[in-house]
Length: 294
Image: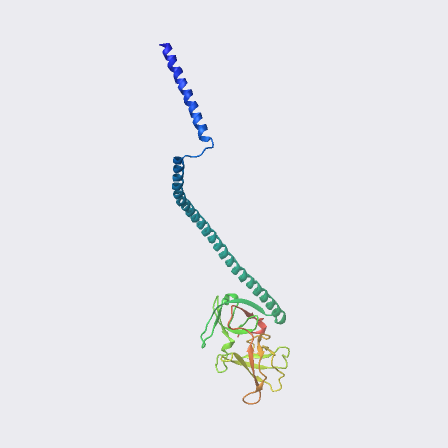
C-alpha cells in the first residue's frame, strides 16, 4: 500500500515537471522572431480595426470633457479679469475725485488766504445743494444756515467772482439770490456799487440790471471823465454797505457810451463767475463795523 502511494506521488511530480517544461517551451516559442500565420494576421487586423473605432470616440469624448474644463477655467479667468477691471475703474474714479477735491481745496485755501490779507474778511465754505431754474424766481440753495453764522444780505462768491446775496436763512440751509436776477425795475432788487481794480478812486458805476439775452451786466452812472477802458476788472466799491468792497464782479467789455440823458455813461460788463457750474461757494462774513447785514 505504501509502495503504491509513493508511485502515485512520483508520477504526479513527473507530470508536473513535464508540464513546466512544455510551458517554458511554449513561451520561448512565442517570443522568438517568426512570421505570423494567416489566421494570426487576420485576428490582429480585426482587433486593430475594432480598436480604431473604439479609440476615436473615446478620444473625442475625452477631448470634449477636456474642452469643457478649459472653458470653465477661461470663464473663471474672465470673471476675475472683469472683477479686477471693475475695481480698477472704481479706484480710478475715486482717485480722480479725491485729486479734484484736493486741487479745489488748495485753490480755496489760496483764495481765502489772499482775500483775508486784502480785506480781512472771513469766508465760510458752503456746498451748493440745488439751483432753481425758474426764470422768475432763481434761487441757489446752500448747506449753511443760521447755526453756521449765516445772515441775510451776506454776499456769496466763488473763487472767480461775486455770484449773489443771501436772501433767506434757515437753521441749516440758506437761499441765495444770484446777481443774474438784478433788475432795476424791481423794487426788491439790490444794485451793486462798483469801481475798477487799481483805480478805485477814479472810476465809479452802478450795476442794477442783467441782460438775460446776452448774459451781460449793464453798468450805468459812469462819470463822463471816467478813465474806464475795455478789459478793466470791475469790483465792488463797498458803498451802500450791502456788498463788501473788493469782490470781483466782471470785466468791462465795451467802451463806456453816453447814456439816455447824456450826463453819465453806460458800459457792458461780462460776469467773471460761471453761474452754470456752481458746486462750491463762499459766504463773505464781514467785521461788525463794516456792516453787511441790515
